[in-house]
Length: 474
Ligand code: SF4
Image (cartoon, rainbow, N blue to C red; front, side, top):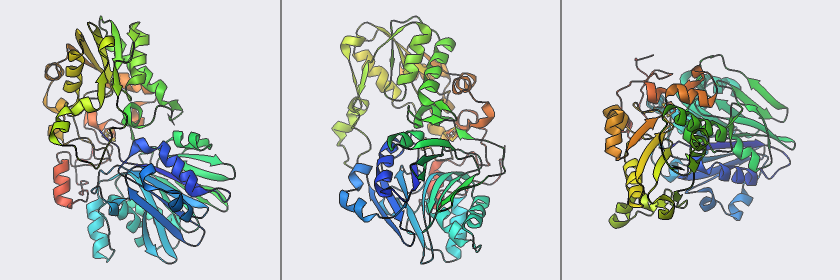
């Protein structure tokens, strides 16, 4: 399961803003590795530099030195809407002299095709195939003079998830959709301001967390300081997977350290699904904290049983068939001496299609595990995500097709236990109404056409996300 992008913005007259953005993007690399980019402004002109691959592959000392100015935005991309190619790398720059803006976006716009057709009909030209370019042109298309009015116009028309940073020659804006599906936070740095998808980016560059950008809010940052334009909606829909999987362990969301939330998920699993076992191991890295929580609550010892090969990520080098057949072995190496003859509790963050878990069970059995009791932090995922998480179509989701005992048999475990929705909410420590739980419940916080799957999205939009806003409001 993948999320779609990390964003960062900085307004600081006394900093090398391109370099700060570069290091902040490093901290947000886990949110996307397909492309990276930075745009800067010196008060008159916006420059942008983007490329395919990870931050360290994209930028050189020379490219950073050319990105001068006191305002910058940056982006790490994982594509969910629009294919993985250079034209879709962000920040995206639109407009011309006197009316230029750059945008870096995290999320997914569900009515982007409709808006795309409207804007294309008005003569707006598109260079890539992302919903982010639709947002940028939508803002540009508003005849209002004030930038805030333009952004507010776009927000009234957009449906879906967007946490984004916008750069104009003189200003930086941070914008979050009315449900607050994706995180976005505000901080200070010396005499300037920063905005980031996650607090870990602030920590790494020596910035101080101030607060979250509220759902529906626009934060404008310029030479006069920070001005907030609050939103009106009281409904909330933060993606619960930020807590389970996406955000980094050392980030804080809504005042809660992710590590603590994940430990509590593991403890909840131990309470809901106790088992007689010798050793708790976690599938690294995202379930490591939950494994510790399970062990603490159950009193069973915890150890590392699988070592993750951290440098096998997305790559543009296609493996040959023999290497592809190795599958999960490329990613995880079991330590036989730790596992041989043991009755294991194996904690993982989620089961989506059910393609990886059977291989994990298999390699653990091959390494000598006597029993395998899978414990999963996310409740059964039965519905697809329309808000920027590259998950699966409904028919590919194993929990939409099989019961828990059937899944247990399919993955080859001795027992299988999922954390309940109530247990998950308790671990996160906020009321249920704060979250989007749609992939467990089917109760989408904005209207979507439930049966429209990702294949249909691609077919209809030729790379553009489809308009899935018709009916079925819940
Ligand atoms: S549907 Fe699931 S993955 Fe998508 S935003 Fe909601 S909780 Fe997150």
